[in-house]
Length: 84
Image (cartoon, rainbow, N blue to C red):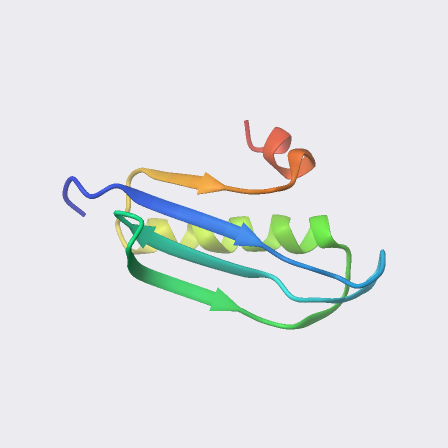
């Protein structure tokens, strides 16, 4: 995909420990151009579980689009530590 710099962002929210969750991911290039995005409402999942699912979903999308390098931003230290 050329020399573009790609950035991924993953976030999600759930009201309680195991309640409806709303994860979302986006891929931007050059911080201003939207490349791809996905969000969905799923039920009975913790906030961290939704982030695990959607980081895998984001990375799968990046691979399928031929993106070889992407900087992913997360706000969950637990999830980040698992992917180091």
